[in-house]
Image (cartoon, rainbow, N blue to C red; front, side, top):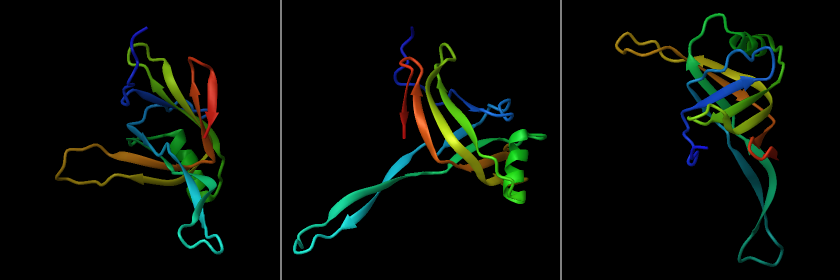
Length: 155
């Protein structure tokens, strides 16, 4: 097997685990991060420092970008949620793929994703660029799955 370390970040696939699953090509994915929120606690009588306690985890919105697509099921799902408040959370997988074999090296399983924002890039007659649509999704959490070991880590 070819060396897959460090993995290339340009070879990935996004898979919706619903009837949206046919749309897998995106230009970029950002927002796969989790932070531990903290809360300071001041101890009575001890003025030299304060304790910092963990409170909860916070997930940044997931942002998917791609060339503007006509007749897209994903965009219909987004517009139904944003314009009609017809929100149907879905699960999706972000797969980082091996360049040599196209098999997943790592998969981020995103749980309860729902559209928060849709936007399209600027139209500018002075530039030669593509129309790019951005989809911003909120989600509950993600799990990291490593296919070689079959294990998952809830984040």
